[in-house]
Length: 185
Image (cartoon, rainbow, N blue to C red; front, side):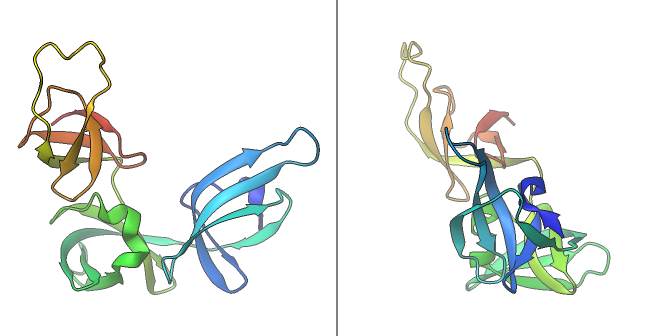
């Protein structure tokens, strides 16, 4: 058993018979009263995401997650197919279970598959990925004073705010934890 105050982003725990993954967590201390844990959690089997509040002293069952190195191969209908890099065995996972990660996946990308017992419950991405800009506004000469950037659509469909000098066809490095532009590739 683990207290909810010890939960961190990415951890998997069991509550009420459901396997839940922490997507975001925030310690909230109101002016009066006790600290609360506000969390966005995802049911790893159904893919549904819920915002919930728990007391820090609540206990949940931490689940042991086994990781295997894998390669993303392709999509087939509503499933994504991954290959274990050691055994070359292929695994399928419903795209609703990896909806956030899907925005960063490109063919042949190496990831880690997460298993609870023998069930594939999710994938972990590398810290950064290289994506190609497929659509963005052209650079306007002299429009560097605002420095706010412009939206750009990547080859995976992800929309990232990029500096004004980035153009269609450029490859950029994107941080997978927050979807932010990091640098040119």
